[in-house]
Length: 238
Image 1 (cartoon, rainbow, N blue to C red):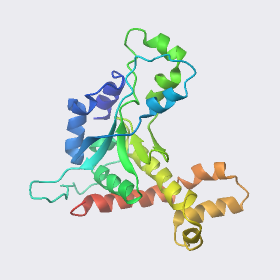
Image 2: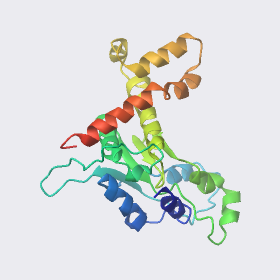
Image 3: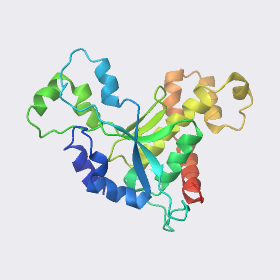
Image 4: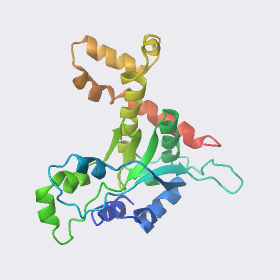
């Protein structure tokens, strides 16, 4: 499944219709989710605003497609999950935890989405010249496994992102909403917030905020988010 999605990613420039591709719909059938258009800019569109020139202007800006759990005809959204939870290397779009991840993002006031601009057709005519002129709009986007953007309040995935990449970006979202932008009063009372406790321990050792952030988003935090995604995915009505 990942190989099919990766091949699709390297043969697309973000034009509309990616969500209807057989590899994408097949993955979403496994996670029992669907994609709906979200009216926020993609990463390519954001980067283009800051580009030094208008190069690669023929590239489509792509779309942001929100991940929404499917519901059955009876209104029961509980997925049919296998007893064994799939490994972290499984494509995020095909992972049953994707339903829970969508709920975790919504609970933090954010959206989980697929950014179709995180691709580039390396075999297209003129692809090498465009990549050499503006890699930030072309080949660099092929290397992005996902991202969290506070401004757009989105956790964005590439079409072939793995499950562990989804969880990693959800951890950055959790850090931003629970630690970085938490109100002062909430921060003083957040003794039981593991992310804040870990961050404050690192800061107490003399690490800068920039150094602390990546370290805080590893270890126990992703494991806790994986459990939250699993619980939400298995719960009826999610």
